[in-house]
Image (cartoon, rainbow, N blue to C red; front, side):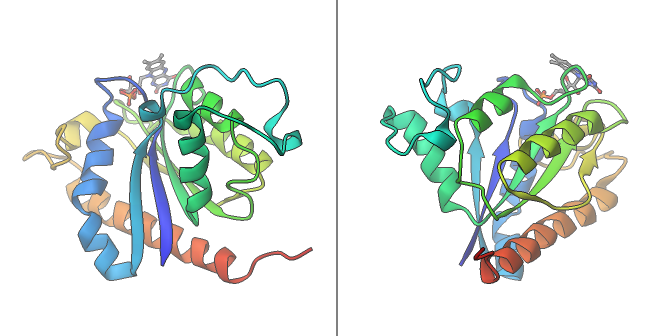
Length: 199
Ligand SMILES: Cc1cc2nc3c(=O)[nH]c(=O)nc-3n(C[C@H](O)[C@H](O)[C@H](O)COP(=O)(O)O)c2cc1C
């Protein structure tokens, strides 16, 4: 079965990204029923990765020996067939915790589809952060699925438990958009899984 990691890219305790993350989590069984896939919800913060410190670049190092929490991040990413990164925009880019976690990776995302979903507490949806993230993901040989999905005004639409607020201005729009995004990442993940580049 196709496995998708949905990754929360903010490590803040008060992250509004978690509202969106929880919304997707709440709908997990409905999505999975419709699309025959397994969604795994992970938070970058849960791995407690230190700033990258290894002596060799991961892509040049076949014999890495890492503490369990760091190895778990690598294994969880290797295990998936596709990914959704949920990222806010911090100072017109994506958060340093995402970049740090990505720097631990080498082949784990290679040849797999990834969709970037940006969000913000304003109407712009954090789009600059997503543009920069896409460039970095390409370096890992992942296929960035067009187009980025931008979710603005998260706090006006979702509560912290991932339920729509009663007066959510964009309920129907986001319901459809998020469902479509899940369908899209499954479609492209399957495509690349079933047609691996053999060189
Ligand atoms: C360090 C920092 C930098 C930010 N920079 C931007 C920015 O460049 N553009 C923007 O639209 N919002 C910016 N914001 C506002 C974020 O959209 C908002 O704080 C959001 O809640 C961040 O996501 P999080 O709560 O999941 O961490 C910034 C927030 C932080 C904490």
